[in-house]
Image 1 (cartoon, rainbow, N blue to C red):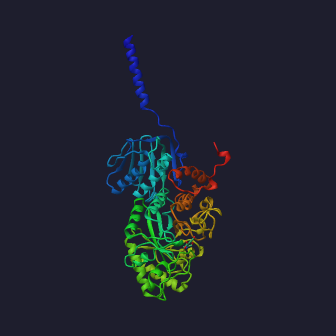
Image 2 (cartoon, rainbow, N blue to C red; image 1 turned 135 degrees about the vertical axis):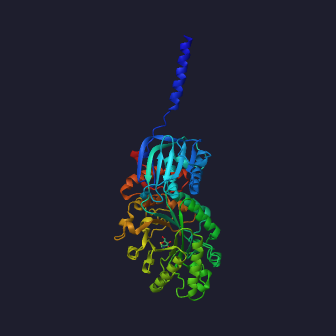
Image 3 (cartoon, rainbow, N blue to C red; image 1 turned 30 degrees about the horizontal axis):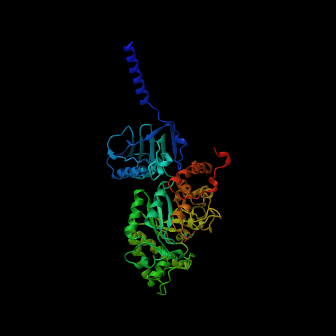
Length: 525
Ligand code: TNX
């Protein structure tokens, strides 16, 4: 009898071990996970993977940038999980409890930024043709995790994520935002925070509007008074500021680690009062102007028939090009209302040659389409469709930034506490429901480099203001730039965005709480 008892308890123990070893992960649905921008394809497999304190981040050996991507991921996951991830290179494909990053040969449609994210009960694998795709896929992985992952301190949460496979790549190669640091100046930390927030939505360009009538914001060693004097104030008379070359390089590097290209803009030949106030010789009458702290535009111009003007432009663009690894320099070109058109055209033609001589591609606001555009010139459509069309006729590619859809400084509605409204009120639906290739007849998908959302800062004074105008509108623009049109739908986007605001709260983003996202009575639980 006692022998029988013994066998029985042995059986019990075995059964217990067996059962606990196949403890099922909770069932979860990847298709129900909110992803912004929406990926090209999602297949759900109905189970879950649990990230825990023995999960490893492994990267395929051979690539330094892949190791960096792994460290970037560990840095994102650490604050909320408290896990000290081991990030290491491996030459074997791991099979359990790891997040494995690898460069593999994916089909050509994945390009540089596409990725495949596969989540099984045992493992997560992320593969791409290029580290840029790994960084984009990491943003998706973040959104597959519980929203608490965005917290800056340790959370008591089980880190389960739904299993399945996401295959994804962008619609447009250029998905940008712009920050005007001239009208009001924003320091390096603010710019880095913005870069981090933009990177979460797979935005890959940050255009910095570095000079305007109200302030010159980038150190140019050969013309030091530009910042010493021209950077000393801002709209409303505050103390202004500027980036030293070291600080600018630091921003460029920080952005590059997130595979974001910085595009520096020096606005020419108009919007140049800060330069004209700093150097009398740049004025036709040889007399320096006064610093300007107002907001109206279109009154200033460089003296287009003085040779020193071109020496100045050459020095500025050379120094900028030297510290800008990205392929573009933006030369402004907008609203030069006091430059006669013929002078404007010959000026832009010369500046274009200067940009090319420093190995960069020229971007300009749509007015530059009046000039003799050369190969690789890019026209940024903000105001006049006929200019953008003229650019396309001259074989330029177009960045789509129509003021009435993409200008982040436009108020949401008449009650918005900051912002302008000259182009439109832009509520979340108006920011989302449009297609770049349907805006202007004759400007088709192949003419479009991508889309960009500028934030002009006449009324924007601090990071809270920036976040209020940028979020959540830019998430819609990010989706327009990334997701195939056939997969975009306002109601679907709206319901994803509504859920996503819980995540924005944890990220500490001061987003605009639009009434369009308010929960209707019938939807309340
Ligand atoms: C127009 S857009 C401008 C900017 C202003 C902005 C305000 C463009 C190329 N020029 O100088 O800041 O409107 O919305």
